[in-house]
Amino acid sequence: MEDYNKIIESLGVRFIKSKNIKVLQPITVENFYDVGNTIILLHRGEISFGDERMKLNEGDMLFIPGGRLTSVTYGRNNPVKLTNEDLLNNRDKFLSSNKNYSHVGLELDSFSYVTFEAKVFDSVNFFASLDIPPFVISGADHLVATIIETVKEDLTEMPGKERLIKINTERIVIEIVRYILEKRLFVEQLATNSTYFKDPRLIDIFAYIKKNLGGDLSNKVLANVANVSEDYVGQYFKMLTGINPQDYIEYQRMEMAVNLLRTTKKSIREIGAEVGYKDTAYFCRRFKMMFGIPAGKMRRRESLMNL
Image (cartoon, rainbow, N blue to C red; front, top):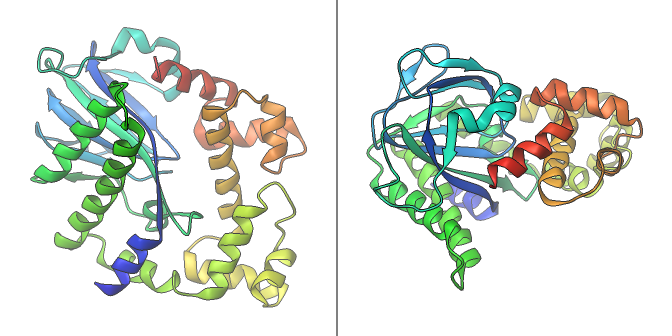
């Protein structure tokens, strides 16, 4: 357990958003995707996910690691099939945000969700690095209570709101990790993960990439950071992480782009340049390829989700 304690201590946790949602009409989002980790708590009705349409019971939670593409169905009986972009353009027809957390608002087909970041050394998405699929969490009363409390706090304007949300978000992360360990889920992935996070040269590469996302991150540069040969650095990185360094760098750049879209009013061109893309058109193509919607519509989606 000592290794897992070290990983938990190294995690930088950041709250992104939370909501209570009522399902106005059943839908299937065929390509649900978010760079943040999302945990969905089913209050009433039905939620299923994945190709096999695994169902949640009321009170269960669905955890979707950041960067994981999956299908999610909200509600029952002949759901309308939508892409992320379809939902963006027609959200009010299918889902409604409940701004008053009460049992009156939690009618049939309702759920809450919290989206958050959990990064080792503030560089690597911990849950994404495990390469695990979305999974159901059940019988975790402490986690349910923490999610509800987080959503309630997010709906208030009371003093100390941000501090309590931060504490609750960190607890959500710890409760998810504990659940994985207690249920002995993804044992092999956890063992591998705890090993490579102890490699100092890899940690140096992660830190360098984070600080220089807008600059030159060629294999030649990374080789100098890790003090290995240019021919070997790609093999070394993939051996420890399971992905090649340039794919990892692109994911990190796109993740930062999403954060800038969420938190700033910078133009698409400015954001592309800031995360290392001199060609705005190429940045937009890669963004849409990764997330399924254009960068401008991603910003609009975030604005709508905050209504």
